[in-house]
Structure formats: C-alpha cells, structure tokens
Image (cartoon, rainbow, N blue to C red; front, top):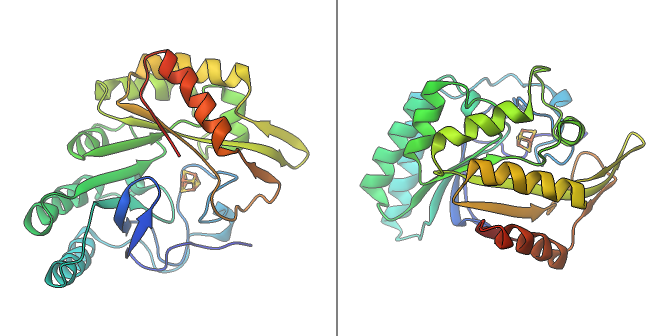
Length: 258
Ligand code: SF4
C-alpha cells in the first residue's frame, strides 16, 4: 500500500503547478496519515495505512522548524512565492491550527513579506469558529469541493464522518464572503466496480450552481498528477479541463485551470 508522502513537518521548497515556489508545512504525523476524508486519489495514500507513531508536531515545534528553514533560505537568497499547508492529511484537524497560522504569518512577515500563505483544506472543519477565523487570515484559502452531488463525494472523497453533507459545506463556505478558492479534482475511472466521473453535464451543472452560491475568488480545476492509491483512476485531459472551465467563466466565475 502507498504510504505517507511527506516524512517531515517542513518540506521543500518544491515547484508547485498551482502555487509557484512553495515551502510546505505538514501538520500531520511524519509517519502516518490523519484526514477527515479518505480520497481515492490521495497522494498520501489511504487512511488505512494508520496514523503512525510520531504524533502531531506541536505549535512550538512547527514555529521553530519553520523559522530555521526561512532563516536559512533567506540567508541564501532563495526565492519563495508561498508557504503552503498541505501534507499527510487535513491541516485544520491540528488542535493548534489557529495559533500555527498566527505564527506562520508573523514569520512570513519577518523573512519573506512578499510570500503568500496558502492552506489546502477539505473544508470539513469550517463549522468551527477558530478554524474559520484562521482561514480568513491567510492569502489563499483553498477549499476542496470535488462534487456538489452527495453520492459522488461519498464515492470519491469518502468523508469519515457519516454526518457530512455537501449542502452544509456549501452553506459554511458562504461565511468567507468570497474570500476563498474552491478546488475541484476532476477524474474518471472506477473503484471496486463502481464507475466514477465528475465531469458529466449533470456534475458540472450542479457544481456551477454550488459555486455560484459560494461566490469564491475562483474555482481551481485540476486532475491527477501522481500515482493514486486507487489504481483505476484516469487523468482528465487538459483541453477538457479548459472546456469545463469555460462553462464556469460563462457564468461569471473566475477559473484557474491546470
Ligand atoms: S482531503 Fe486531501 S489529504 Fe485528505 S484524503 Fe483527500 S486528498 Fe488526501
């Protein structure tokens, strides 16, 4: 089974398709995965691999490690576009997430004031006031919504909490007053004999309706780029992603298609 992608708390910098030169922050264990989704395409593997033994890094540890890295990069005049929270699971599950964001913004201001702070989140925790307040402080609040259709989300993203409802998440996303980017992974294939395709007319129309309600800065459309734990998934070709993007643009929604 594929196991964790990131074996440290601070990783990179890496060249990100979406974000530029990106220094990664993994708030989840370095030897396991902790997520409130269990996506078929997760680059960190399935949740079944376990949460590991290392535990979560503390707020203090994250700040120390990040400062050491930023200090050394700054000494070397290394470029940096963005500090990105992603990693082996859902960053907002970290119990000190809000404090970590405050520390990160302070360190960014000190060492790389022009760099952005981005969080890639599956949005399952935006029912918490502290998480919402923290996400409002970052430059790129990137929230996953792979489909506006419940059955599709249950098939692709597999929320751990059976009470997850797309309608609740769409409603909760509205509280950012447009200060968010919706991110959608487009894919096709099958898993355990079940067909998967979130690029059909029905899917795209439902997603457009939901995104219009959320009214984000943009929708980010992308497809698979690396090995996925479910092996029978297919990448959606770039020209198809662009064509789907046009349908959003026709509805007045800005698109970042990659
Ligand atoms: S939300 Fe992100 S980290 Fe969690 S399972 Fe899905 S892709 Fe992986």
